Amino acid sequence: MKQGRLIVLSGPSGVGKSTVVAEVMRRRPNLRFSVSVTTRAMRPGEVDGENYYFITRERFDELLARNALLEHAEYVGNCYGTPEQPINEMLSKGIDVLLDIEPCGALQVRERRPDAILIFMAAPSFAELERRLSARGDTPEQVVRERLERASWEYEQAARYDYVVVNDEVAHAAGEVEAILVAEGCRTAFRGEVLQATAAR
Ligand code: ADP
Ligand code: 5GP
Image 1 (tube, helix red, strand yellow):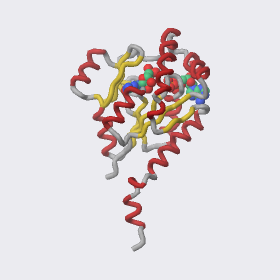
Image 2: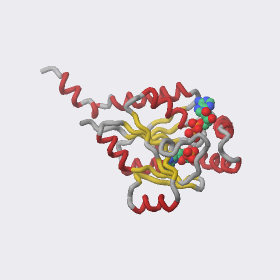
Image 3: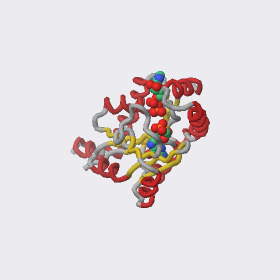
């Protein structure tokens, strides 16, 4: 059976990753979101087990010690990580899996799964990024500043990704992510069966 594909999406906090991911998931039924674990506090409206698994630092360290995380990173004072087993299960069923993770984690995934597709999401401008992050209204001013500082470093990592999508408008950005997935599915390496079945005898 054909394996699913691992798609990694990164970008600065507030750029619109969650918003665009929701739209891409709506458009592509064969895509599942990888639910990360995090030690950060839940935001209003977030659902445990849907946006994240919200866990303690002790539990996080336990998962690390058990080698249960595909990648992990510290981001502005909190720990985040990707549970590996659910991903392996989905990929082996031919389901594509989307990870919304920051660049340290993305580069760990690249090391361990060289065939992962890495997409970086940029904002139309830094001022717009600042506006979106503040407008979300669920992040204290000091944390907004720390996240913006981190964003400068994150932009420097973009050159290490396979693709860059600009989130000017949600529908447009989701369309670009979809276009990447469609093009990746047309890679010659994935088309062996089609070629075999359709080649002239
Ligand atoms: P992230 O997941 O990258 O931290 P969010 O998806 O939470 O970002 O988006 C941050 C804020 O920006 C939210 O208030 C969201 O509604 C808004 N937003 C997202 N994409 C756009 C866009 N293309 N244009 C304007 N606002 C956007
Ligand atoms: P937030 O706290 O705003 O949900 O996420 C902060 C940052 O952590 C974002 O850049 C997000 O992509 C990243 N992130 C979320 N889950 C993971 C994860 O499992 N691993 C890593 N490395 N980063 C993550």
